[in-house]
Image (cartoon, rainbow, N blue to C red; front, side, top):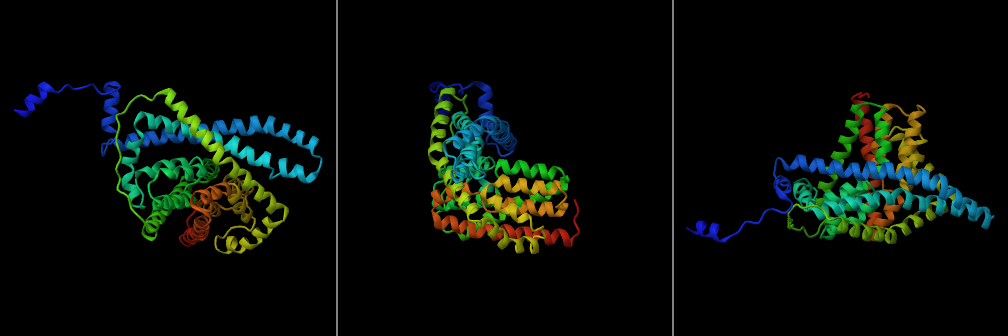
Length: 398
């Protein structure tokens, strides 16, 4: 009787966007069919941010706009205004504030950031963003996180520095700390990832599986340990699920512009500071000292040539430089296939780049940042050492 009255009184309003969007909304959180849709969306997100943003756009800005025009012009201007060798080296030298800091912040990171912010705004305005969090919630629970952590993780594949910034979307200090640790340990940025995949492509599919499997297992294992060690409040996962709808172009543009302004104010000064520290280390010849200190560990534990130490140091200063150094060594025949895989696993798990470190300092404090480095640094070398031992004991070839 009550159902008959309800049918007569209530009026059903058609789903916003029509039958297609209504259907997508229904399957987006289905235990079975929601997973393929989630993988498609995440793949599209990575293609847009990691391939188009970090590949095509970065290549255009870095090599064409800055490489052919802005940096040569800046070099000429600096040489004219400041004939002093020290000033020239500070501004436009090998570790110059213009040729390195601004190029890195504007030509390399900004395209990645802008494309991610566009994609993020589309997912947000379409109503699918909360659904991604719901579908990935179970796997992140194993690491003491909830489904919201999937977004900074995906961004980390573009730029770890920005991923640390977006960890603010998590509610508790404990969750933000765990996420920051995992980003620093086991999530390679797109620039580094591109070089790594190029190097693995010259080996075999087995080498790629060993690298990817080692990184994934390390991520899950370290996340599980961190969830047990780090004390703090554990939040329940509550999330309002809006209907799926067509994104509004105006909303996307306004949100993206506001977030890009935020990036320019927050992150660019950190790149300048990091480059300045690198310049000072170079002038004081401390980079060579660091190489000498680290060489015994690299040679004895990892079974790598001493020259590999340079790549690890460069990897801290800038992640893709470190991977590129290994790539160059492999091309020259200085690394065996086993050494290549061991070195790639180690540099992937290695401490984050200098800009990322400063972002961790800004977001979590100096004490926490140093604590994360103190854990990640030995963890990376220990993992690489165990992999080196396992591959050689079981006589694995690639």
